[in-house]
Image 1 (cartoon, rainbow, N blue to C red):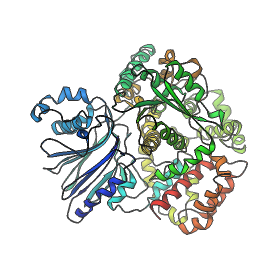
Image 2 (cartoon, rainbow, N blue to C red):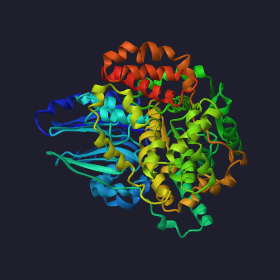
Image 3 (cartoon, helix red, strand yellow):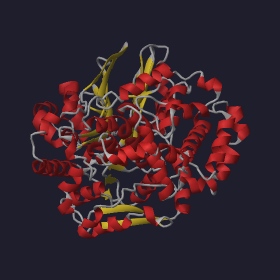
Image 4 (cartoon, one colour):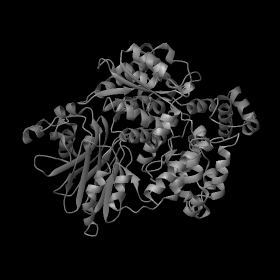
Amino acid sequence: MCGITGFYSFNTATAKTVANVQQSNQKLTQRGPDSGDIFVSENIALGHRRLSIIDTSNHAAQPMKDKSQRYVIVFNGEIFNFKELSTRYLKEYWQKNGGAQSGSDTEVLLGLLIEYGVKCLEWLHGFFAFSFLDTETGKMIIARDPFGKKPLLYHLTKDSFAFSSEMKSLLEWNVPRKLNYSVLHQYLQLNYIPQPQSMIDNVLKIKPGHFMILGKNGLENYQAFYTAKCKPEQYGNLTYEEAKKELVTKMDASVQERMISDVPLGAFLSGGIDSSVIVAMASRYTPKLNTFSVGYKDNKFFDETQYAQLVAKKYDTNHHVFSLSNDDFLEHLNGVLDYIDEPFADSSALPVYILSHFTRKHVTVALSGDGADEVFSGYNKHAAEWKMRQNSLPKTLVKLGAPLWKALPHSRNNKITNLFRQLDRFAKGANLSAKERYWRWASFNTVAGASKLLHPNVLRQVDFPLMETEKQIILSAIKSDDFNEVLLTDVNLVLLSDMLVKVDMMSMANSIEVRSPFLDKRVVDFAFGLPSEYKIDGTMKKKIVQDAFRELLPAELYNRPKHGFEIPLLDWFRKELWGLINDDLLEKNFVAQQGIFDVTAIENLKLKLKSNNPEDSHATVWALIVFQYWWKKYIA
């Protein structure tokens, strides 16, 4: 796991910019604290920061060149099947070149690209972002893994191409720091930025499962090598019992591959089904597996460490519980805000940051259950959408009660007001199309609500037709009654732009690699080849995952509410963080001078925050705080 950066000048006008490689590379130190180096030619520069995982010797250092010195690669990620690929495809290559010089997956990937070009991308099991350069022809291949676990941002002009693992590093290539107000509007709806867009104008993310080919005159090709698709006919002939067995087999292979490491390895263990499945299977291959949980001293309702302890005991893991108070969480808040180099307001980033921080004291690699909810249908919104598609009495009753749910107080702060909030959202969703309902339930704010927050001068610069086009591209998978289409949309939006961004960013802030067995291509392809009723019905979410591994897990893990990481933002904003809001980041005069947000709307939002009916105001305030902190650091 590492960080990469690079610059390709297409003419003399930008050639001097290659000298910025040291500054750009240095910004990636937390991603790669073990070492760093650069490659520089007249018009191309590549930088690499290394977090040593496989073959920690200097033989595996990057930028890596082949024996002829013609080819160079900078690579971020892991190729778990690299030994198999080496044996199968590179026998003659090694014979010609006197054998491998390291035991690294980087050298195998370099050889595959030399021998087979982009064709080899479909053979890779793992996650990656890399740049491969042929110094003789000037051809450069840039690629990103199938689900976008590893980030890769770029800035392309007629004169140059710059790329990096992080925005803070990319900006060192003299990228203009101009805000994209259309993206800001979407951010205020979702609390994160839907890819491939970014908050900086003309900075994009390479799409998952895509590669670029660049030459001396610019971009030559940009296309997909992998796309997740709904193929219910692929495994639709399997009985449910057969499908369960096949899932266990595929997950076992995925977990086993991800146990490869030359540094200490462990697993996150939340107490939920997904992480417990990973621990149960990983324990087959590592005795006394290190496992890690975050507990909540001040909020026992959201503390799931008792369930994690049950799994740890069953599999005799070396279990670590970090039991934290609200003060402990607040202590790490600045660490999160400091590392975020593009606005991202999923508040569960904070516990992921803390979990990664404490886990890094024991291991360098951690397995996680990420991806299972999106691929196999594990969210409450999935249950709501399933109910919405049934002609049931409860659905009718909730719709009839719409005026009441709207009038009652809404807040996530306690069970009753949260129920009213959910009923109101359900009732409003009942009157929308499947696509529009999905977008509304994925959002914290409506289009109108986001518009009210922006200064009129900024609002005039929002390209609403373009935003609608981008939204419809995201929602394009939803076109029939197949529930798999909803899950595929989650993979393309929520997983890509929220969940994976959160885990990558917060783990890399602490120099720890996170591996996700549920996001093996073979597992995901299998999941989208199953009938949707194998995943969700009227009684159970993530049905096949729960049933397939039931015998491996403690019975207490079943039939209990899904909590996830919850942060008491509302309480903090009303107390400990009120000064940060009212006297600093959202201070009235500062907002007015800044000229991005509408002063009256911000003042009304602060009043809403302290009212008896706060609704989701705390989520919007958090999005604004994150943006303001970022704006002060990178734009002002």
